[in-house]
Structure formats: structure tokens, C-alpha cells
Length: 295
Image 1 (cartoon, rainbow, N blue to C red):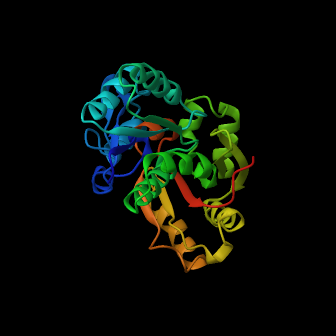
Image 2 (tube, rainbow, N blue to C red):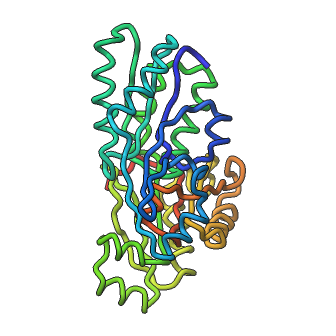
Image 3 (cartoon, one colour):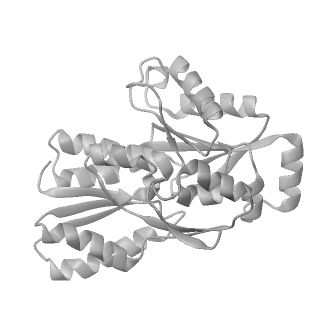
């Protein structure tokens, strides 16, 4: 495993068991649900089904990122064990957590001048960010050292593609990302927005597609257009969803049919509390390796 620790935020939306299995440490975001504060601890405190049911019932949500102090404590615990740190954050395009991690890093470098502390902006989110972390863990386990692994992360993070669609616009309207008028018209017409994450790590609407069946087909077409090696793609593919497993499974089935050389089956994870507090139920996200994101 080497003399360093690979670390991320809980917004990587992998299971606790998966992160433990891959020997990836993590630090938790926070969220408020119905006026009570919780740790976004990978669904341990509030399972996804409960989270989304309470949101639908009308309980308000609010999220907060990892603070500088929390990062300092997380990093220093590792440094005191005589190990270096490679930490990857949620995208700076949707959160300020990268800046907080960098402030903590700079503070600790003065106290631990002989230790290495690398912070990488994933420019990704949810289980796409998780797929980056799993790939880094695999490379670490194959013998890659911290300096080389840090450079690999910087060189390759924009090759991880993130595509999302939503069949429920309620929480996009509630959060102000879609106007009430546009949301009402979209809901009546069965519009399912298709979005992706751009090269600056921002979530960008790309297409307005009418009907769930068509958007499921379209998201797999986007994979075919952007994936490494086309239909010969042999890498991993992750999906995440907010309590809409039937839709996620429909996408996974199409992906497995279209890309028979996949490394294993498509793996499906729940969207966690931080991301899910903004999307609400009905969102499916697809993640895969492709060419460098340019727009």
C-alpha cells in the first residue's frame, strides 16, 4: 500500500464497505434534513430511501461542505502516523471544498515540512468521482507511488465522463435551478433534462428530451460517442441513482448490451445525501472513461 493514504470526501458516493475494501479514507460532508443536522456518512445515519421519502414529504434540506478545520484534523491524523496524503475533492465547479482542503494543506505543510500533502480537484461528482477514486486505488495497489499517482490523477481526471438525467423536476424547481414556469411546462410535457459535467467541473444542461424512454436511450448514445474505444470499451462503468433503480437498471442493461467488453458488469450506487439534497429523487447518472472533456 506504500507509505501514503488515499483519501476523498463522502460525496464520491461509493458504499462504506467499498471504500473500506479499497483502503480509501474519507471525510464527511454535512446536511440538514427537517431542521436536524446529519453527517453525510454514506447513508449510515439516514439511508437513501428515508432521505428521499422525507424530502418528498416536504422536509427541507440544506448541505454544508467540509470545513478547513475538519480537513486539518483529517490530514493531521494521517501525518502523525508518519504517512503522506493524496486527497481528492468534490469538483470545485459545484463546491468550495477544494479551496478549504488547499488552505488546510498549506497550514499543515508549515508544521510537517517533511511530509507530502497533495490535494486534487476531481472536477467530478457522485460515483464518477468514486470511479476516479477506485481507479487511483487500483493503481496504488499495482505499485504506483504517491508522486506518480498524483500526476496521473491530474493528467487523467478530465477523461472521466459524467452524464445525468432526471425524470422529476420538483427539486430542480425548488432549488431555483429551473424556473417554476419552465418546470411546470417541462413536467406536463414529460421533459427529462440531460446534463453533463464540463471541463471546469460544472453541471451543464445539454438537451431537453421528451419521455423517459428516449432519455434512457440518449444517455447511452452519449456514452457511445464519448467513451474510449467506442463499443470495444473495456473499462469500468458506474451508475448512481436517487431511488429510481428501475431506470438505472434500464440504462445498465443497454450499456451492457452495447459494450460487451466492459470490465465486469455496470455497478450501481445510490446518490448520497449531499448531491441528492439538490437533485431529489428521479436522477440517474452514468460514468465512464473517454477522451478528454473539452466543453
